[in-house]
Figure 1 (cartoon, rainbow, N blue to C red):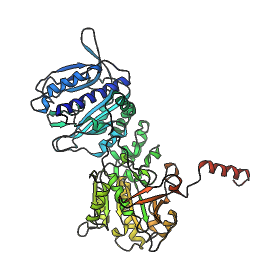
Figure 2 (cartoon, rainbow, N blue to C red; figure 1 turned 90 degrees about the vertical axis):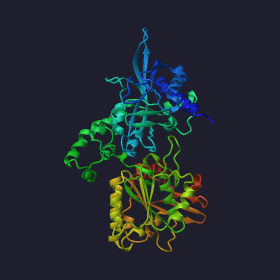
Figure 3 (cartoon, rainbow, N blue to C red; figure 1 turned 45 degrees about the horizontal axis):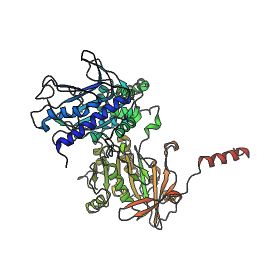
Figure 4 (spheres, one colour; figure 1 turned 60 degrees about the horizontal axis):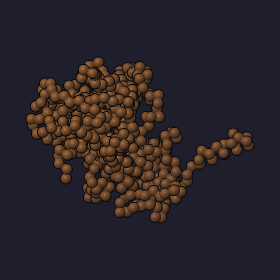
Length: 553
């Protein structure tokens, strides 16, 4: 069992080697420094004004210097900070800054503030590595951010950071002006004017299986390299859109579009809700269609999951919610759902599961199968009782307060209708409430629905004509996933799809074997796993050519 000092030594040497590898990747060599501030503001240190210069071959000595002053975390001590800027050494023994192969930022949540998912999302979208700081019992006390750059970043005018660091701070939108430019080492607790903060583990920034050897570290740097210019442009747009996350997401990060986009925003009296109802799509509109499950379940709209009895649709819906509410490690492989990889980067926030038929015993039993380690920490269960006199539609308006809901499952629809499922007015009222939520929150709303009694479809498309209730169940969803049994197999496919074809929707029917022990569906390999595939592009081209020759076009 390694000692705390040995663990800290491992963290420090890994982190310093990683940063030197990033410098080396852009052609930088020279010296970095470890230091403590000359005074006690904003960080406390027993030994103020310490300074230690080291090169890429001196990492071991640098780690030992940090450990010697840290006193195993026992106060009073002197937690050293890193200056990640590479310096050249002059003949007179002084050092001159050259630049950096990384951009960095320390964003701490001060007071009662807590880290929100939108901050992390904006950083991750730029390819920057980030994971939370801890403070006391809170593990959401801010973000540590490191971006490995594809070119040398130069020193800013104030000499405290390089180009791109302040922009990371802006994008995170966590106000801590006196701290953001410092680079704080992982594994070290820093006592500040606002309490003691710790980024516990540098490996939290890296792929889960990251190795420590030099070759692996270089591969990590290479595979995560970013253009700092993209960060600069994103920060410019973020500030131009007055730090409204909804505007930033809708408009994107193209500086040339800012003036046009803001013009429309001004014309609707700078009312964000009114804009969301009327605003134009940005030019790269295809980027606006986001998926929880690519090719199957889009965000911002309603998907109907319809099936005959005994197909396991409730288990499938519950599994989707659980998979979507796990915080996966950086580099951890995304799980599959109906043969498609879950877009885990789009699953940040609270996932909501309305369970109208299954009570806690069944819910808990399924959860133990799908999530035996209890990793699904962001799943909110709802039943059918919302308080005296509170309707489903009224409760949905309450849920609008949740900042980010990637997915909501309603299982089944009929439990949340205010009347007969054959009544078009009743069903329309239900869809109005969930569509408003889907569009406003950018959520993927999945509604589980039954087929008519005795229905026996032989294709996914036939499911559409066998839905129970009003025609509204057919008209209102953007996507309908149909499922049915065929002997020992379960067949699933799109019965309806109002998504543009260039968005990569799954067009074939897929054949699954049922796994009763794990309540899962296993997609059969190769040709056995596909029914009714569409014609390939080559086949379509041959038909088109023949039709042209015969004068049929």
